[in-house]
Image (cartoon, rainbow, N blue to C red; front, side):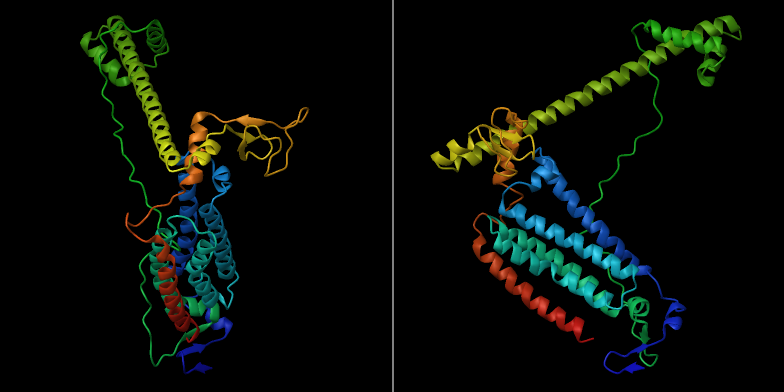
Length: 387
């Protein structure tokens, strides 16, 4: 059976199973891995944003803000899309090529619709950035799905007509949304130099050295040094070994304590800088508010002990879960610390939003991005469903 339009020839299932390109491998395996890693990368970025303002993922996504609402819808779509792609791949569904292409192509239009339905400051910049990533991803992977001989053989049991063989496309390695940026590892040397401490070793280190001598469990290199310096006199060598070993243990302990102290100082400095940054951002946000808004924002806040939502400390009932805080109730409003309150205010007012330039008219960007994306989507649909 031959399709003159596409130049693909259908074969029976047994012939497809024995074909050398049958199965999930090569670039198709890279595509499958990219889908999953891209999803993990997106969740990793969201978790990083949440931690940067001192919130957990659940608290971050529970913030009542248009950008968070849009983010939740897009993440949900990504999870469903990856699940559907994996299911079709493992079930060897005949519609894998078309439906996977459709899921990829609909990603950005969904972002546009959701963002326009939940408009917020900086939405144009977010859409413009998302459009670039989406366009690159679709250009690579939709093209691959349409041209790949492996995809046709594995899912549709079709091979190219022998009279005109099309070469296997070689797409660049790009994930479903974007690649995970790998952080370079810092490789430390395993060799450490033993330094002699001028202070007298503590008693516990002398005891360790004595135990090693009594149990004949000396360090070979250090024992060789002591034995050589004592000119072969074993009793003198043992005394010298204990002295050297106790000094070595003392030096290692001092270095470990110094490292712990430096690490603690780094942690405290980071916390101090974070607190200053949050206070600075909070002050900038308060300066942009009206007097009535500042009064409302400065009201003491707390967390509902039932659902952990952030509410006014004086609330009688939780507006999120309807928990009552009346006398005798098991639920209470737990007061937030100043750091937690500053992080919440910054997160609720400024959620990963950046403008392209200071003078950009952001309100016009969604319409432009939507128009360009729609045209590209139309052209890609033609390419997908006319093959």
